[in-house]
Length: 633
Image 1 (cartoon, rainbow, N blue to C red):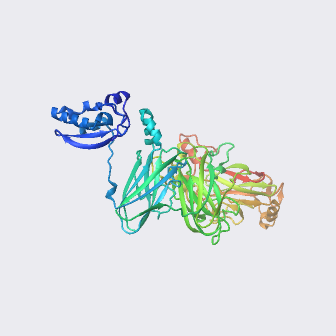
Image 2: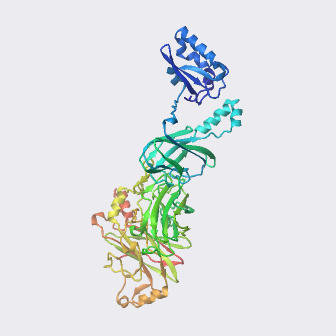
Image 3: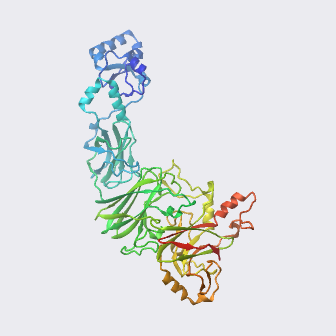
C-alpha cells in the first residue's frame, strides 16, 4: 500500500515517507480487531514506528499491548522498518492499496524482454511501439498479460540513495509519473499502425506494472502492443512482457507485412480566405504526392502529425498511365489532381479524424502511378504551419514517393470578381494571351461575413472521427448555387447551358458538371477549378476565324476591343464563363434599384444573401494575361 502526499511535519510525526509504498507481511486478529504487519522496503527506520501510538489496536487491554510489544521485540522491529497498524487506521495514513496474484495459478507462461527507445509520435499512432504476436493454436481460455517497466536506477545508485531519502523519493516520483498500458488487436499477428480499434485494452496506470486480462478464442492470433503516456522522448527503457494462460500459446515479435517503406515530411500552411493580395487558390493547396509502384502490391498509407487536435485524412487517386484504369480528365500525367471526384478515388482513410494519425490500406494495388492527397478539415487552419509525415509501405517491391509542386508555384495570379444579377445564370469575361501559356481557372462564391460563415467545427470532446456537417446557411447555398466554370474559344449564347457542358470548352470544371463550391466532402472541393490547359494564341485565333457563324453575329460589347465579326482592334480573346443553375425567385438576393443593397433593417440578411451571388475568380498562368470584366447573358 502507498502513502499520498505528506508534509514534512507529518512525515516526522508518523515516521512515514511521502508518496512511498509499504509491504503488508501479515494480517491477524487481536482482541477483536484486525492488525497488519507493515514493512518499509527501504528499512531505514531508527526506532519503533511513531504511528504505533495512534493505532487503536494498542488502546485495548493491557495484555494485547504486551503481546504486541513482545512480538515487536522478537522481530527486532526497531531496526527492520516493521510496524503494526490497525486495519481500520490504514485509510487515515495511506491512499493506495495494491493486491498481488500468484502466477503459479496458470499452466503456461511466456516471457520476453525488450528495450524501448521513446520516439516523438502522436498518441493515435503505434507504428514505433513494441508489438508482439500472441497465438493460441489449439484451445482457448483465459490469458493475462503483464507489462513490467524496469527500474532505471543501477544497484550502486540505489545503495547510495538509501542514505538520502530525498534523492530516492525524487527518483521514485520521476519513475511513477509516466503511464503504461497494453492493447490487443485482431490483426493476425502483424504490426498495426493506428492505436484505434483494439479488441482489448487495459487502463493506463502510473505503476511499474500494467495488467490486462481477457478470454482468447481457440486458434486465434492477436497483436499485442505496449503503449505509454509521459515517457520522455529520446530516453530508453527496459520492459518485460509476460503472458500467463491456461492453454498452450506462443509469444513472438510481430512481423511487418510491408517490407518496403518510403517517407516524406511536409506541412499544411494556413491561407487566408480571400482578402487583398491573397491567393484563394492556395486553399486547394492540400499537399499532394506522386506515388510510383513498380509491381502489383499491397500498400498502406500512414499520415502522422503532432497536432493531434487537427482532423486529418489521406486519399489515393488514379493517375495517368495506370494499367486497366483510364485517368480522369482532371488529372494529368505531370500535374496535380484538380478535383477529388468519387470516380477519381481509389480509396481513403475514411472520415476526418483526430489523434494525429490516419491510415489507409489497399490490397493488390496495380503497378503504375497514383496521386496521394493529405488534407485537413476545412475549419481548423488556425495553427499556422503544421508539419506532418506521410509513410507509405509496400509488401512486394520498393515504391517511389515524390512531392508535387503547389498550384501557385512559378505562376502569376490574376483576380476578378463577378456578380450574378437576379434571374441571370451566365456571366462571361474576355481573356487575352499574348504568347504560349498554361493556365487554370479557380472560382468560388464569396463567403458570408459574420458567425454564419463558420464551418461546423469539430467538437474537441467528440469521437476521433468526424462527419463534415454544415450550418444552415450552407444548406441553403447548396440549393441555390450549383456552379460551373469554363474557358471557351467563343463567348456564350443565352441558350448555352447543356448539362454536359459546352462543346467549345477548352477547359471546364468537374468534367462539365455543376458543383456546389461551398461543400467539401468526398465528391466535391471547397474551390471550383478547371484542369490545366495550354493556350497557343496563333492556333486559337485561326480556329476562331474559321467559324463562319462568328462573323455573322454581333456580340455584346464585353471586351472593349471585340465588337462584331472580324472588326477587332486587337487579338481575339478567350472567354471565362461562369454558369449557375436556375434558382427559385424567392431565393434571389434582394438588390436595390441602384445596384446596391437595400437599406432596410434587413440589411444584414441581404448582405449575406448578396454575398452568395458574388463569385471570386482567380487565373493562374505561366505568363501574364489580361482579363476584362464580367457581364451577364
